[in-house]
Length: 227
Ligand SMILES: Cc1ncc(CN)c(N)n1
Image 1: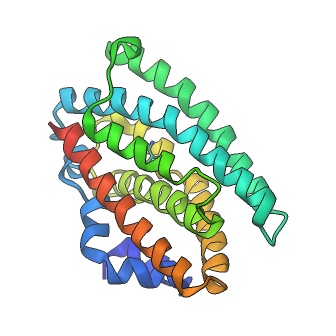
Image 2: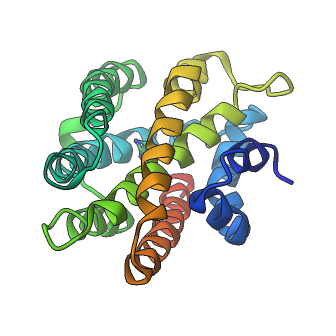
Image 3: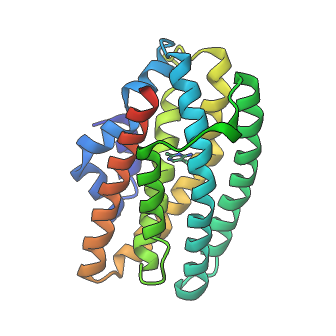
């Protein structure tokens, strides 16, 4: 079994079952050639810069999505502490936006002149479609968990002992590959699994379909970055 999947399967919740069921697309999202090229040091720096600019735009659209999950938690959650998990996620996104600005100036990427590519627009539109009050908390938290998980698993792979990640990209990989972010993803997964345990079959269907769409969007995002 894929190393990351083994750890995730320990939880033995619905999410782990789904990751095993959809392992092909999960692996495509977390072991994409773009990530593997960071890991083996062969990354084309123009691809990296393209990813940096496009991901900055994505993260700006991601903030309202995470806020919408926080709002749903306030209205629908059966557990008080969910709110704090999302609040910590929003605080991390505040740092992340600052980091994108600093990192892009280091690479000569002018954020103000970047237009979103179609793949990015499609992904952001998908996020918007999950923000409405008609979307159940269970479905939205499943999406949030999956979105964060892909980055955590991808960038943690670039920090493993055998990796040859270029020194100038180590900070990027640390941002999502660090243990604290791993813990955040496990907290999201726990919330998702708790909700999925009590979900209706209709909600389960929607949440699984949403997970699949997230993984597909993530693959497309890496493809776009690679050029
Ligand atoms: C496309 C994408 N997916 C996920 C993440 C992690 N927040 C991100 N920054 N960008």
